[in-house]
Length: 430
Picture (cartoon, rainbow, N blue to C red):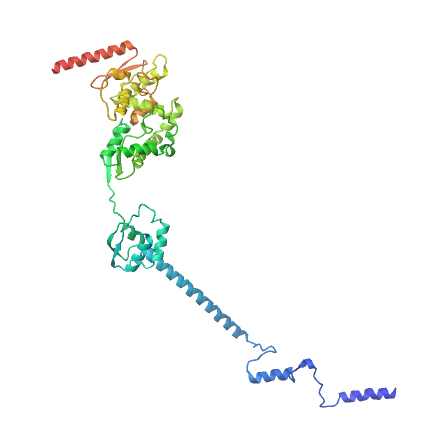
């Protein structure tokens, strides 16, 4: 026990001896130096403090400055790229629209059948444009190579550098002078007479008008033409080309002119309420237009329109007693269409004409209107006169005075009186 006690005392004594250092462990030694010695040596070589892994310990201020500098560099880069793009975009827009281009003139030679690609290079070499590739792209957007509006004419041209792309291209196309013509279509004109007026005023030819009426689908654009029966009918548009005074551009297609008249018909019918009035009648629109066209051709004075209308309506309501309308105007129309020109005088023999439009031997209404009637004729077709007695006959003298009758005997007496009066007048003149 004493030996063991002495040993412990000796150990404590050794530990308390001055100047004796504890030997460092292998983990704390780096290249024969302690960690602290290694770090002190590094500081002597480099005043900046570095950690064990050779990383510099920056201050908070140094870190902030570095971040700001990086942010500024990034912003400057973004701004520079944006400015470059903006400048390029402005330059392209200026080339297209010529906002502030330098004003001077250059001469260019356009060859026959030039393409937009060739034209772009010609204009670019002359200095009229800055970006031929952009000019080609712009032309492709407008389908210049295929559009009939851009038929470039070969020749030598002087153009200004401050012209925009559209103005430049239009400088090389055939110049068209837009002229207008005013045409008045009399009330009661037929399709043939309307076409003749168009042709006389330089608006296409009769052949092209006839071809247009055969091939153009007018019924697809105008609903009031959809239900028309073309059986035995001369023209689909007869009755619907509204007679009025129009201003037209010359040099247009036949459908342009015909559609103008159809548009006016549609406008008048809507504004006047005629389309709504159809709901109150037992007739179709085409039947109303047939009645109106006969009124237009049979009555000479405005105050006779509604009475003539009443005669037609009275006969249509009693088809057993009066199967035929017996109107000379329908025979005139049939003869005129067959002759290709207006016929004015008819004979007793003509009344036997074998034609669907002959109201002397074909019952009811004609296959279609016999002219393009006026507003008043259409209105009276809707609303015939309410007379004290029902008239079934009418006849007019050479002055356009109308005579009405209820019976055939009265009608024959009127005819005889007219002939006697005209014979007497002729004798007095002779």
